[in-house]
Image 1 (cartoon, rainbow, N blue to C red):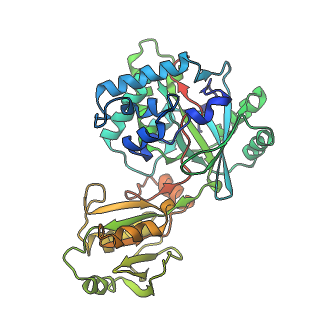
Image 2: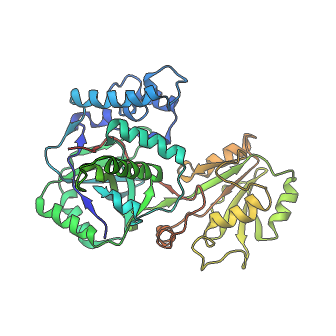
Image 3: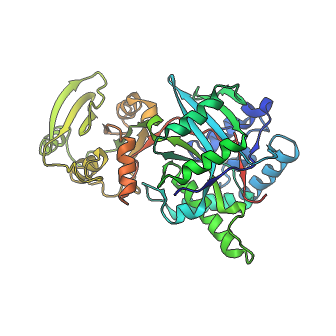
Length: 416
């Protein structure tokens, strides 16, 4: 069963929401955050990227930066830019992109569910990134930014959510930069709160869609607080962390593409010839070509697009990992031909989220920065959940979710 609870969210007043909220900490650089927050003392970047309050070049991992985050969080509350709700409740958060809307429930997930594997992951985490987010949670004693979960579709939850989304939202705005729409409602009815909690108890699992490091950090800090509290009872607020949970059927995973700096000493012709061992290679011309289905890839090289279709026998459709196009391309192109063994550390490769479009990978090759681009057909939510359910881990840089969660709509304190 999945254990969740309502919480007393800390949120901006309606008239300040567009000034306070921001993109997540990990989708932009310090310089970009500094630019976006310029002239806006109420921007959440002062809490989630507080290095912007120091001279340019200041290390974002400097202890003074973490301390500044806590000082700013307190200041935002003292000035009324963030205000805590008086009652424990759930929230509905809707995101709109390209005419499609997805509706998530903002809840507090249970630390033990993460530690015992009922909150399932599909990616490995890095300890240095975990520790960075753990410091941020510790110093603020709060989950400033939510994590992004998915759950298997449930019609009763859809009905409850629809009851609230038929009403006037608490927040309703279009964010700058990306142009995505954001709406937010409060679920304050005690019967609905009780029923939502009960429905989640019937779930075998929840799935981390995006935010593996934030999930790990939030859960580890909660477990740390439990261990260090001699009077720990199990019902303390630190036993929970904030998540936005979406029905899997509403989510779309966008392609996550690769660009490589060189051809590993090969000429373009030699490279194409080597590809023919495991792929059917078809030249498509100068117009952008997008992969048409699973096991079909788009290659951009020397100003031309190519279709690559993996030959029978080069993949295993019965293996949750072997069936993935990221596995096929990593093994048969990046490793076997280009000599890239570790996607996490090799400096010859970079990754481009599909939200930027294939024009972005083309641009990076045409500029001479990169030698070749490889576009992949996106992973499905069913594949992601199957991999998580079977205890497997996806290769690095497999999934890209969009839109990202807006930070600052609501915050969860680890103490009442």
